[in-house]
View: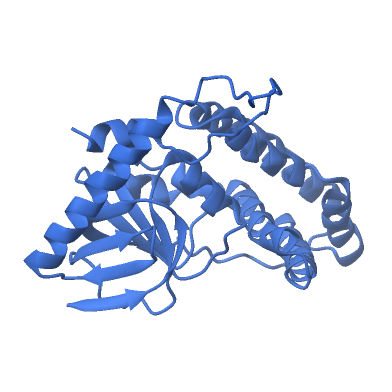
Length: 287
């Protein structure tokens, strides 16, 4: 057995078989163009197409989480149509005669570097959002279909997903009923990925030391303590199964208070947010 200490990002206990997710790698063409107006039209067409995709993902997110969390796909739309970003891309095309894909890539590098250097943790985490939007925009420009769709359709059994990095855009495309837990090598507590995982109730741990040869191995992911067990013995499995049952039973008991009015003894009403309960997941595990 291997035990590794990670950092818990989303509470819960997951027990399952490891499956590795690797991002698709796209070669970005770089060339100079004389027809800058054509490249700008290509860019605008790709933006409009991606806006429609985000609208669809927003609707899908509403079916698995609350409106507040689903709104992150609207924040992607805002980044996509951000005036500063858009004008910078156009400037790259007009002044440097770059093709649209290369222009988006160049601007993305500038913006992500700017956010990565910010002191505020929340703002620094937005660098991944900029990269996500830019990657999708380049895919649209190239007419590349999302290979991740095929990947997520390939597994019908329940798995623990292991990846270097994940985005909400990738997570919403999963069959979430078959994803028991997530382990990533990179991320932050303030990232939209962590927020999304907590909202839909999927245990998630970040661990840079997770081995590469993890495919098909039995794993336990403890989203409470941050512990990860690889090929655990029966006694560890039994102990973690008991901890899992207890966690979700306690969660189910708390969920009944979700719709109740929160009032202090002196009659003051207090608004509370019931985030990260994962009601459907909880009901499925507490049988």
